[in-house]
Length: 102
Figure 1 (tube, rainbow, N blue to C red):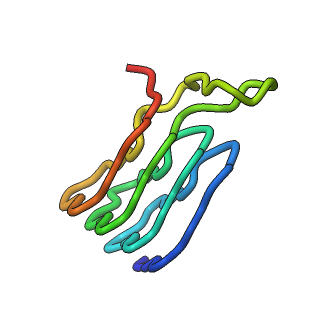
Figure 2 (tube, helix red, strand yellow):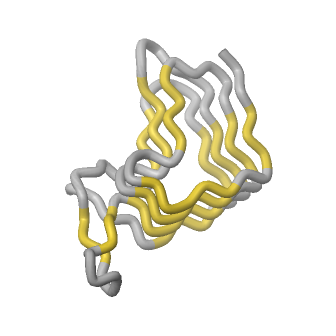
């Protein structure tokens, strides 16, 4: 079902920043998602549709900090934003520092 996240800051997670499974017309806008262990945003499930990411910052996704704290190592993530389904819309975002598996 439809969910909108506005002005949210999510950071320093070991897993996904936002997991929108089975979402229909879900939105993340004017938000910051930083330093996630896996994909910053993942949208999947049986026929998700209409996901939108707008005017947001996604940084340092798919990486974990080493125990000495000075380097980021890639993890098996697909990318900063992984979205399946029709009508996915990404507009006016800044996406930087994504570690991915390929």
